[in-house]
Image (cartoon, rainbow, N blue to C red; front, top):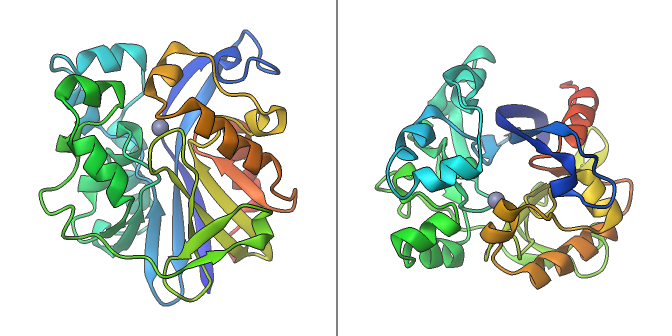
Length: 278
Ligand SMILES: [Zn+2]
């Protein structure tokens, strides 16, 4: 049912590994990619999980007070590294992306949304309402720039199917069946943001894949059970206790499941070698 998965790096930043994982992280500057997953469903077409960063974000972050956010996160942004450009290089037109699943509303995940004019969206309406209700300064703390979204964003929302337990991920996991066919599940992973969600693919190339967004910063954060200590990460968190509870559940996911945190270079490089399109 899932015919293809590819992982793209749509922007990246550098920071000390220690700040993301104070247990095993080194005092070395390491690369933190912003990854986007391209998934092809046999009947539903092409889907993106998150959209990465684009030059649009840099332009919007020049304003006050948003420029304070850009000073905290020095994200590398080029047109050549955008998801839409890389997809064109793969022979995929923007209007061929039929669905976009958003893990959450932080700017580095939604900045590319406007590049896909006909896509429909899966997102947490609760988180969206909460973000829109914030003051401009509070939005800054939550890294939310509403101008990144198109005017008809809400009208283009798709409703996922019914909720079901996901014993393949271990105790405490459930998810909504995206298309009602058991091929993709939206899994709540709250804490990093209010309605943060991952995308579980039970079977691609004979393996289960779990895109966990920012529910963990690094694969080693899951192994060590550590939350980041950087000021930027702490400021942006919705609920640290909930984040740690989610992280603890992720530690219980069987090793056979390929977990992909959005900003983990180790997971990104490993996935690129394992995700060979048939
Ligand atoms: Zn985030």
